[in-house]
Image (cartoon, rainbow, N blue to C red; front, side, top):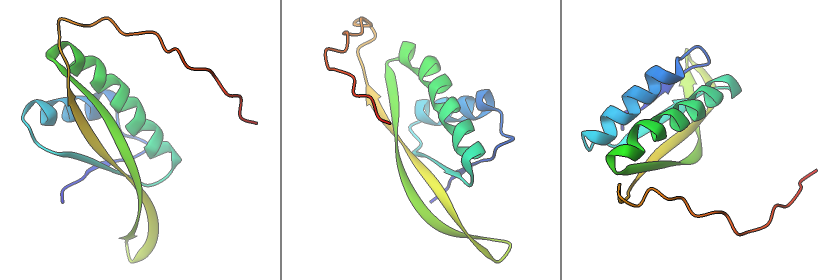
Amino acid sequence: MEYLKVSSKSSPASVAGAIAGMVKDGVPVNMQCVGAGAVNQAIKAMAIARGFLIPTGFDISCSPTFSDILINGESRTAIRLAVLVHAISVNSMDVPEYSGHTVAVR
C-alpha cells in the first residue's frame, strides 16, 4: 500500500492538494506520519482538503492506526491515517447544529 509521507516540515496546503486530487481521481488516500509535528501537519492538511472537497460533493474523515516501521534500520512508531471519503449533496450545504453536550476532560 502506498502512503503519503507527511513530515513536520510538510506544507499542509500541498498535502491537502494531493489529498483532494487523489480523492477526485478515486485513488485511496493513506498518510504516514512519524512524530507529533508530522501528525499536526497531516491533520491541518485534512482540514484544508475538506474545504477543497466539500463544494464538489465529497467530504472526508480519517481513521488513525499505529504502525511499527523501520527508518534507517531503526524501529519507529508511525501513525497512519486512512482517509475515508463520504459523498454529500452539494445542494444541502446547511450544517445542522450539534445538539449534544460538551464534557470537560481534565
